[in-house]
Amino acid sequence: MGMGLLPTSSLPAATLAGLTDLLDVLPDTVAFVKDAHGRYLYANRTLLTRLRLTRQEELIGRLAQDVFPGGLGTTYTRQDARVLAGHDLTEHLELHLYPGGQTGWCLTTKRALHERGAAVGLVGLSRDLALPAAHASALAAAVSRLHAEYAGPLSVAQLARTAGLSVSAFERQTRRVYGLTPTQLLTRVRVDAATALLRSSDRPVAQVAVECGYFDHSAFTRAFRAAVGLTPSAYRAFIRAQG
Image (tube, rainbow, N blue to C red; front, side):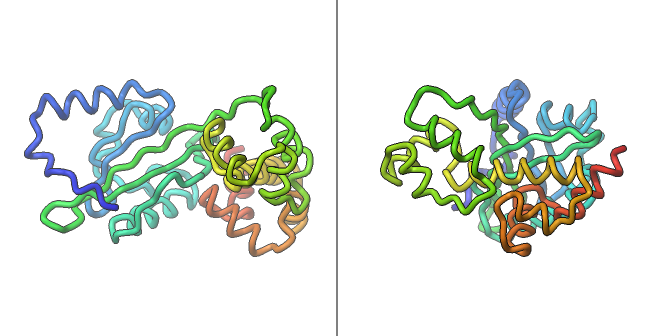
């Protein structure tokens, strides 16, 4: 679903200023606009801060691959190209890595901007995820089981039964409380465990995969890369290069 926004030239300057002012006061959301080549046209204050930049001019005209570390920026640039080609990105769970080693989970949505039927740029939002602690609810037992047994072949149906809910009710409650689907929540827990092992040990990647609930090495690599933007081996190399 393309956004079909009006050209920025048709919006009053005061309206544009108001929008950017609003985006600049969202501490838990990264917001940006890019041109048809994926080059930054605008970034809110949150993104500039996380990239350790002080002025818009330091980012404008650059690609993601120019500012994000390792091969991660290349992954984002390719993602932008897919969005510009008509493939919307909606609530995509990913782990952002920033210069200096700062990390954070977020849900990213990107849409192409169209003018006279052609993609002229894209707009994106990445909302931080701060998961609440397990609380006294039907979800608490399921979340506790997920953290205790993520290395096993857990299914959404099993977690729903632990919560005493139907699968559909469990999915609704998980989405309401955590902002994630049950599958996304399980992926987050497993990938968090994998990043910890890759940072703190010399275990082979295949062993890390098994210890985090992935019994197919290629499936682990796909899931990890989808979430982090790097393969497990590349992530380990990136962390070690940070010193």
